[in-house]
Amino acid sequence: MDIRPSPAPAPGAPEPHAAPLERVAHYFATLTPMSLSHLASIYTEDARFKDPFNEVQGLLGIRGVFEHMYQRLDAPRFVVRDRLGDERQAFLTWDFVFRFRGEARERCIRGSTHLRFAPDGRVCEHRDYWDAAEELYGQLPVLGSLMRWLRRRAGGHG
Image 1: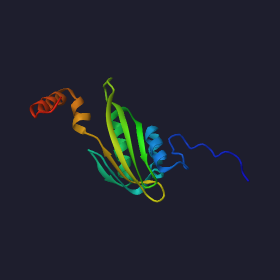
Image 2 (image 1 turned 60 degrees about the vertical axis):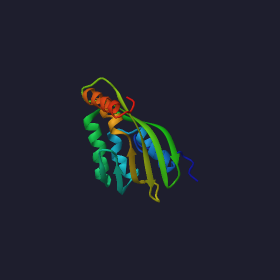
Image 3 (image 1 turned 90 degrees about the horizontal axis):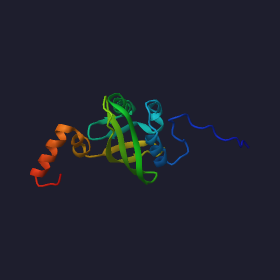
Image 4 (image 1 turned 45 degrees about the vertical axis):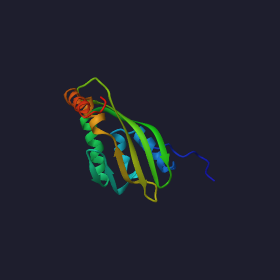
């Protein structure tokens, strides 16, 4: 019987024996450009991904979404707040913290993710939910002012 400890996973690699929800939450909380090489251990080859700006299928498409994020933003990171789920599906809430290139101000988008897992525990469906109008456009100086004005005109609070 071999009682040596298992080697630690490579930096950015998910823990291979963790439950699917914990593996995915840890992966996103520690996501870096280098950890994108481990996408195949998180997503199935034909996984579907959808958010307010993207709808892609397959590892190359999903990798492209994250690569684009790292190209366009400074210091993007996810802070996983809550998680709920089982072996079939999960729901995460998170803060996405980032800076636009060339800006010192840190911004935050609050959102959630619904995941469905394949029988092998990898993600086969990933759907992000967040309000682009409030969380992103509303933080921009000109658009934010216009949106607050429109909300007041429409009878909302802003």
